[in-house]
Length: 167
Image (cartoon, rainbow, N blue to C red; front, top):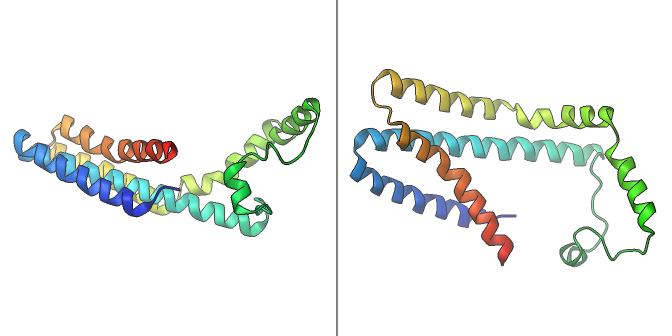
């Protein structure tokens, strides 16, 4: 999991760079980029919280089994490749049975929908939409600034994950 403190510090630094860049582009660019940056941050936070609650509920209900392996084994052998010797055909049959068909896919979609449409996430998307409308109506929308601010949070999160996996 990403170290949250490092991610927040990185986001603050990148936001300060975004503010510094707005000195060159003007006030409308600053307002557009900051409103979309904070809306994007809210959406990311809401998504994280929604899916976290969904996973916790599924663990409590027993849909997701708790790991019975030691933590060091999980780190060294994430997919339990060395846990037991099995025939390739058996593994393929087991994996196909796990995948299931349309019914299993529909059930999984139903279970994960609660995380996708949480109230906090809908409010965050509403803030993004309303900020766009407000800026556009009042003639303060700079579309490049808005898109730049919107892209910062997902890009920083993706780069942070990439560098964490390299360590």
